[in-house]
Length: 128
Image (tube, rainbow, N blue to C red; front, side, top):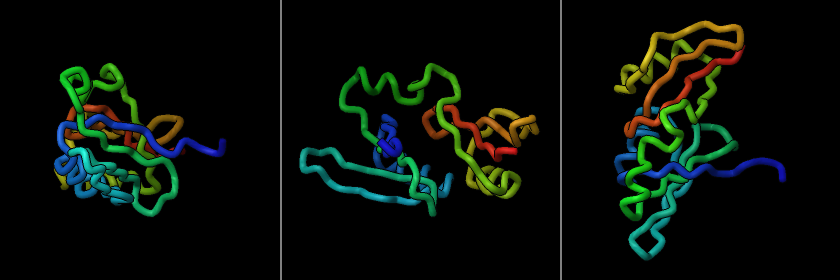
């Protein structure tokens, strides 16, 4: 098995999630297919990559809805690598992304924790 292709992220609404990931984070839309049953197959990934993508899956019931924004128990669960931390941090701030801390420069690289529109925590990280 060469790699993980997708990770599911449970969302409240397809369109609001799609807008956040494509507009605020700069991801590209890979696929948006109506499945014919009221659901869609919506995949996004960082622009210009062939790596792992996010399957944005709308919550189907109350149990799934309760997990929106808390899929990793309040921990950072997603790590977005960048080659230009300062530029991407500034672009994301301008797009309204909420950072929970000021940028830090650690042994492993430059990092700052941010939240997606639902409260899931991400690291913006430029490895050393």
